[in-house]
Image 1 (spheres, rainbow, N blue to C red):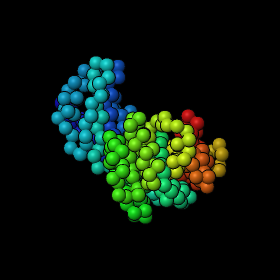
Image 2 (spheres, rainbow, N blue to C red; image 1 turned 30 degrees about the vertical axis):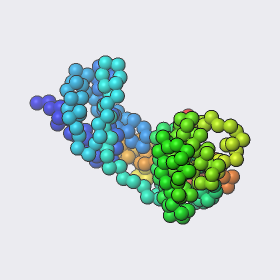
Image 3 (tube, rainbow, N blue to C red; image 1 turned 90 degrees about the vertical axis):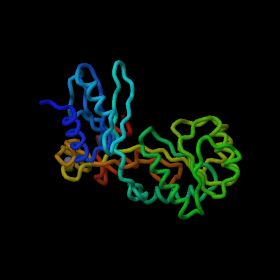
Image 4 (cartoon, rainbow, N blue to C red; image 1 turned 90 degrees about the horizontal axis):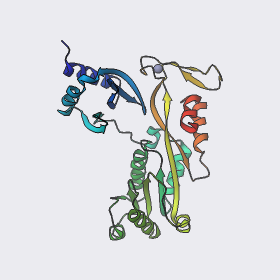
Length: 288
Ligand SMILES: [Zn+2]
């Protein structure tokens, strides 16, 4: 007999075996598509008839061990996303895949008073980069204080450490607060998802650095071969190890204000020359 609980548990076990951290249940037309997010790309792996979807939702909402369950309304239904709760944490800039000159550039920025803006699309790994910067401030620059975006001038004035970290800065008040702190001699790392609206002269005087980043997928080492169109580069055909996607894992590509570091396109091309990613992936991420 068809059992929804059994089918869902099979899907989750399959995701866990493949190191998938996000499972999407998407009601689309006459069916509910089951999609795995792997290395930032969603791929359909299974589907249910839509008539079964209410029962699927009901089952998922009772909770799934090791996963958090979130629901997003779409038309007549809700889309459900399961997110694995124990995604392994990377420990250093080298672990994430930063280049030596990029790490040196970040060290120089953190040694300078002012604001360092870390930006990039949602899901480009900004938080991880900032965690690493926070760690560097703690270890090598006399400590760091994490401030909430709701902080006021007084909170910033009371900070005893030279390093300050603020996530997801977007309100005018928070920006004013950061600018004020930047004028008072701290190294401040701020995460921003959108451009700031502050007087250009102030920005020039208090911004110590800008880091813009995206993710690029890493070629699967099991099925990687020379690119048949251009043998300087590599490509992959897909295999069981990479779930036929040709890629396993992602690394950041960055562009920094430091003139000694490559531009984002150069960074991506260096990765392709090194055989870490494909030319097709460079085109998708940098020119797509
Ligand atoms: Zn493979």
